[in-house]
Image (cartoon, rainbow, N blue to C red; front, side):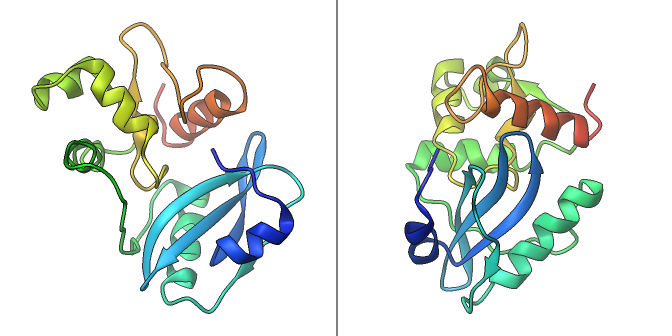
Length: 167
């Protein structure tokens, strides 16, 4: 989870937007050639802006719409960087509908892999929310989020699932 200084924010992100997430009031968006490369959860003190990068406005609009009603009419182009296995996991994550969740074990079975490997791929997901790793839960509870099993990260996972209508 990236927690940059204000100076680094303006150099590293093509957009920073306000978000209604517990503990992380802003999202830092990295784009490349019009495609979204990453979303970082930023701590209090950030300032929102939309830069000139192609795709920045569309990405911000999509996420704002998501935060309003849980959907995104026109998703931005995504360019997540990862291993072939991570790419397979992330592709499967995008098939989980809002308001639903699957366990790490169920997803692992589908991918003929292990729950731990799926959890590690979820942890490495550079585009949370739009590649919805929050929809993957443990067999006995929520599991982790952003590599953490407590604190603000888990509160964000709970918020996202509740926002989408998962009970």
